[in-house]
Image (cartoon, rainbow, N blue to C red; front, side):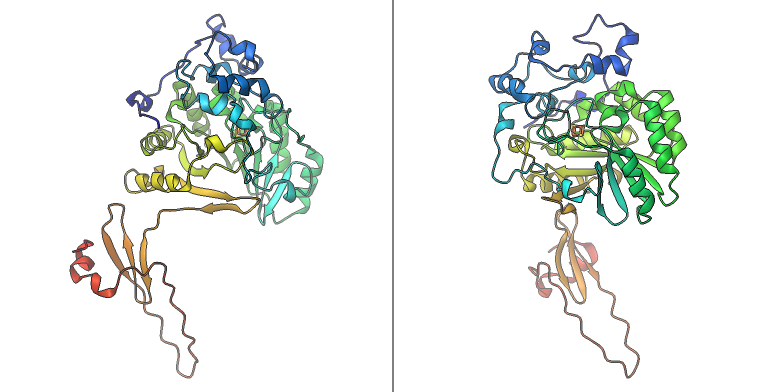
Length: 417
Ligand code: SF4
């Protein structure tokens, strides 16, 4: 369990840490960061003392999901704390080689819904467009670990021409989400070319990019990139932050640049054991996101990714966290907790149950403090004469309260006697 350090509320800079010899120009160059990513056991030596589980995990990582950590993000790791929540996200562990019977190679069933390479078309009006298999750093719980990083069993096939041709033909598609891998790793000119081709398709109304680059590699969010992205509105970006320590001075500046370019920002977090499965940590995270002008969007129950059981936590824990957010902080700070239906069910919202009972004439609710309230149902409009009326069967979600238990005082004050 994480203990919340008050300093996590603040925006600090990890600085150059283990790379004191890099010039400021090198350090602030995103391509230098990528070239100097930590990818091997050799590079970890002298920086952090690995546990036995991590040591074995690093040795095997290149058979499944490569290790890759930008120097900037690496400096956020506490080298003396094996339970560091940043470390758990990016340093491989031997547990990744343990598959449970419910683990899935393609937990969201994306491969079944790919009409052309790299394009997932599952929902009527929107598509997921995978544009690269590379990320700035690799998350050990990645839903697409089968195809990202270039070392897994499966290769991500890409064919932009076929994908664009498909989108031109499918006039029902109005929303395109670019992801991967990470679309913000494409060069400015390549990304601009792709966005221009998408914008040239009249029925595509809305573009989105899902990216962890502003978090792993804030140096990539240059004024030039933001000026280019601004040409393609409406364009939204969903970032991916799991722990308040990931929100540094550098990240706040990068997110501020995107927001100043008029890009609405949302955040998608994954609920991870030992990282953010703690109500206080999550509350600090969502409040800090708002200070960066990012609206918490989704909190995902971790998908059933092969070798991720050591990072998964219970759905009950997720509901408990949501219970500790709703009513306890601004509504803008509350993400929607979802489970992606295993095998391709899409996002299914999960909420604490605030409906105590539902009856034909009223609904009985509880608020975040547990106080009980009743809301009267609107009486059905009387049917015109001579028209047959079909009675509707009332639904009873949880009829634990009998009418007599709700006193007239509870109706007025919301308090149960
Ligand atoms: S950034 Fe996204 S796609 Fe890349 S490894 Fe992390 S979760 Fe996977």
